[in-house]
Amino acid sequence: MVQENLMHAAAEDTREFLVAGFRSLSDPLRLQVLEMLRSHELCVCDLCDRLSVSQSKLSFHLKTLKEANLVRSRQEGRWIYYSLNLPQFVALEKYLADYRRFSSLAPAPKCD
Image (cartoon, rainbow, N blue to C red):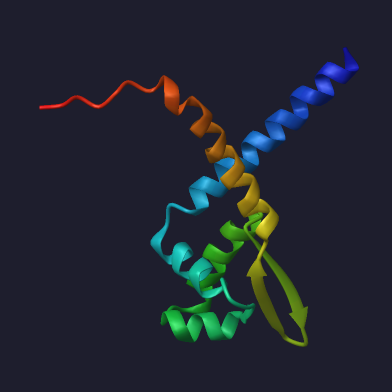
């Protein structure tokens, strides 16, 4: 029974991370941030400059991405640098890829 409860709790945690991840991807500004972080980490000041947004507005979006585990941060002096958390992207990709195995069950497209 304890093992079953632990497995249920782990599945619920995974589901919450998936929901947070997909929800985070639904905002255009957050997608822009992720695109900018694809090649290398960036300082929050660089992100603000490149996106032409205030630090307070960007901080809200970075917090959302961080809570969804899509980005990591590290502090160097007074600056915070952000980078992608690739394992979380792999988890989201794996979740979507699992639906491919059901593609043979999908109805055939109608021909006109």
